[in-house]
Amino acid sequence: MEFLNFLLILWAAWLVWRRPERERLAFRLLVVSCVLMVLLFLVGTHGSLLPGVNL
Amino acid sequence: MALSEERLRAILAWVVIVLVGGPVAGAVLLGVVDGDSPCILCWAERTSMVLIALVGLFVLRYGPRPRYVGIVVLLGAWGQFMALRHSALHLARDIGQGFSAPILGAHTYVWSWVIHGMVLLVIGALLLFLREVAATSEVRELRRVERVAMGLFMVVVGANALQAFASTGPPPFIGQGDPIRLSLDPRHWVWSLEELAPPTISWRGSWTVSAPDPAAVDPDPAHGPLASLPTLTVSSWERIGVPLEGMLSGLARDPASGRFLAVTDRFGVYLLDSTLSRVLHHVVLDPGFSIDLSHLAGAAFLGGDTLAVVSTNKSWVLLRPDPHAAARLEWRHFRATDGGVTELGLGRFATVRARQMYVLSLAFDPSAQELITVSVPNPRHRQLVVSRFARADRALASEFEPRLAAGLSPSGPGRAPADYVVTGAAVADGRLYAISAAYSTLLVVDLREGVLRAAYAVPGLRHPVGVAVRGSQLLVALADGRIAALERPAP
Image 1 (spheres, rainbow over the protein chains, first blue to last red):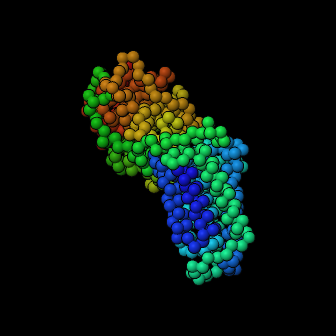
Image 2: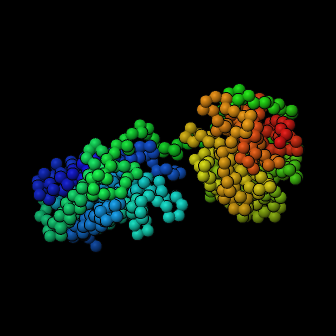
């Protein structure tokens, strides 16, 4: 899934660079990529979402 | 000093170049040269840096729109959290230990913390000095340095995508908690879904441990984890003859002078005479300054006039009766005092096997000059661990889980001494006498051999909180101030 996320990011960057009129699509890809990154981090920490230290 | 949009774009282009060309490209380089391979958390942190750089490209193209500022602040804050969560796994390990190889003296998760923090600082500084910008939908033409930033971004992120394909695979495969060395040889690639496997979701995982409540345990010895225990009967009842502030939570007796030391759940510490009918000294500890004292759990005499008190979170306080105690100095230590006690020191016991478990008892072994605690099991950590700390420096000397002696056997499958909740303990003749509020059982532990030698059902005890030795007797103190006297079992 990390591979897929980098492809989404590359797509968004290419739109910003070469198709700047597609800002809405590029921004949506940015948001989707952020959400995917957050979800992947939560998958990696689902056994303890908060730091394993004294709070 | 005001920052024009033109100047902002020039700075931002260089920020993107530094961010992408530094840590993000450096991470790929480490992979190719050294075989460094990110774990699933590292991947998320690296992706966050890439996304921050991508937002920079948006600003270069479309200007500093509020939603770009909003998302980059969220990314910076989330990145800080990710780095904190990730670093928490390793920061407290022993010297030099960590996950994967360090870079410039720090591990990658620490660098992630630094980088996301710097991103927030840079954003704040740029916004602070940025001149008012009128909202516009105009697309900006890219200048040379901005085109360099765009091109570098595409190349570096493309390289990251290739590394991600090799080390994590195409969807639905995801990053690994314990990744293997990066290889460009497909025969060595391992694609995994193991991070999705465990179904449990928790806020704090193994740190989800609530404070112990000995009043809520089952006191019936017949339900205990050991089978066919002999019974010890209470030979007489006594009572603490002076009013205490709060419920009793621990009791000790000094074999030399016969004095008693009592502690309460309101941080009261009482030095009592040998008849339990007169208060010799009294203080109320300050639980907030500066070491966090949770409820007081146990007390012990360390020989001479040194008194020890422990709280459930394994913080300790050493006190001494002192007719010359300086009221001005002791004010900081005590909420209340009779003026005749000095605090010698306070600190925290650090355990290994008993980590993440509370304690409800304290004992002192005079022959070894060691303080002793016994862990209280919880749903996350079910162990009965005897921890011994050197009196000299209060550091851990040894720990063990008592083995069952011949003649003792579990009462059923899955039952073990870890089912006991030890709330009071005392040492005599090389034996640790520990009373468990759960199943009202007295445990006798051979400290030299690390063996649970004997266990006795003691019916009639409700909420025991302490044990003291008086000659051939064991005194079991209850939370309400009553004291049950038992004949001490022969060694």
